[in-house]
Each structure stands twice: as structure tokens, then as C-alpha cells.
Image 1 (cartoon, rainbow, N blue to C red):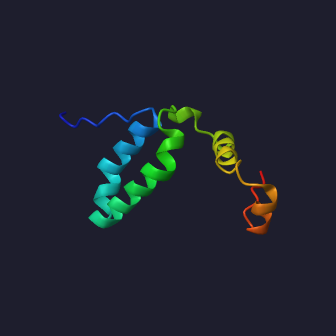
Image 2 (cartoon, rainbow, N blue to C red; image 1 turned 60 degrees about the vertical axis):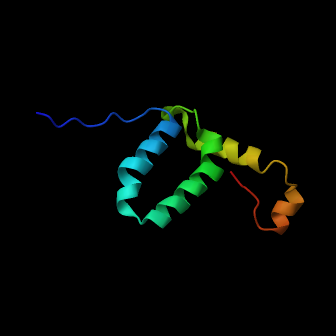
Length: 86
């Protein structure tokens, strides 16, 4: 028919690039897209870059959050109201 849908990447970074290019960029202003991309590249991509999408589970995300906050003491987290309870 001529209607060829792009294949969806199976790894996180490829999927994120696909999402920002094909969908997010059509829904928001240029400035919002730039802000979203900055936050994604700084805070999300480093943790999920090469992970296959099917391996990103709630359990995996909890583990990554625990690693990210592991340098902070329990006392600090409780004081700041940031204690992670899983």
C-alpha cells in the first residue's frame, strides 16, 4: 500500500530518540522540547542507555534509584524527607 510504519527500536536510547523525534517534537514548542531533551540526557539516559526495553521493570528502576541515592546517609534522607521506601 505504500504506508510503511517505522520500526520501533528495542533498546531504551533508540526508543527515546524515536519518541522525541517522531512524537514529542510534534506536540510541544521548540523550547519545551529542548528542555525535555536536556533533562532526559542528563538524568535518564545515563541509567538506561543500552538496556533492552523489555528489561526495564519496576524492580530494575528501584535498583537504579537505590544506587543513585546510595551515597546519601539514611539520616540525611530522613531529615530531608527523601527516604526511599520500597
